[in-house]
Image 1 (cartoon, rainbow, N blue to C red):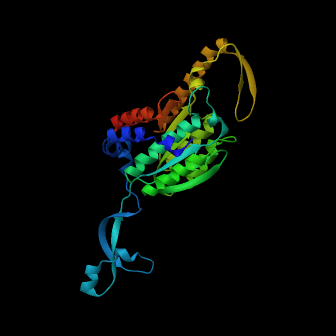
Image 2: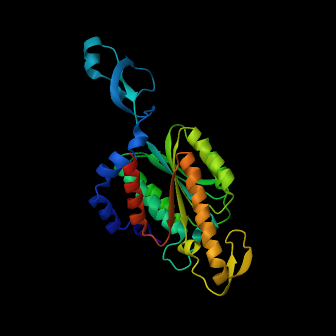
Image 3: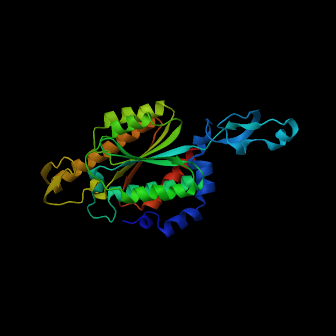
Length: 297
C-alpha cells in the first residue's frame, strides 16, 4: 500500500473543510493538553543574559550591543506546544483481515498518518515509535512539515511480523520521554491486559496524556463465520476448530465484555479509549472521536 493511499486527497480535503486546525485541534483535540507549559523552544521574551559560547548568535540583541558594546542574548520563557508520539503495534496479528480492504495494520497507519498531519498542521511536534516484543523504529517528535514525509515514509515501509509485548514497549517508552507528551497507541491488544495497563498507568503517573486506539478487524467484532471452521492465532500459530453458529453468541458477549473492561480501566486512569473496527471508515472514525473529545473540553 502506498503512502498516497494512507492520506488520500479526498480525506485531506474533508479534514480541511471541517477546519480541524481551528475548530478541533485548537479548541478541542489538544486544548486541554496545552495547559501546562514546560521548557522547550522559546516563544516569549522575558529578559537578557550575557552571551556565552554555544549560544545561537541569532539570539543576540544587537540594539543592546549598540548601547553597551557588550553581547547579550534574549532570554526566553519557554512554553512549547504539546509533543505527540504515535506508538504503532507491528506484531503479526495486526496484519489480519477477513474481508475488509484494510488490515488492522493498514487501518492503524491511516489513523496515525491523519493524526500526524493534523498535529504538524498545528505546528505540534509529533514522533513515531514502532514495537513488537520491544521498541523497534523511533522518530523523535518534530514540527517541521518535512517531518511528515519522514513519518509517512517509515509507515509505508513497515510490515507486521512477530509477536507483541505492549507492556514492555510502553515501559521502554516511559524512559524515553523527556517531557509531557501525548502518547497515541494503536494496537489490537491481543495479549495479557493487566501488564499493559500497569505500563499505561506508569505513563499517566509520569504526566503524559494517553489515547488508546483499540483496532480490531470487523470479523473479530462481529464473528461472521458459519459452520465448522478452524481459527488460527496469527502469532502463536495455535489452531482451534469450532462450531461457529454455536460459538457466535458467546464470542460476541466476550468481546463486548472485553471492550467494556477496557473502557472502565481507561476511564479510571483518565485515558481516552477509542474502540474501532476495520469496517468503519477511518477518517469518519477519527472525526467522530475528535467531535466527542471537543465536547469534553
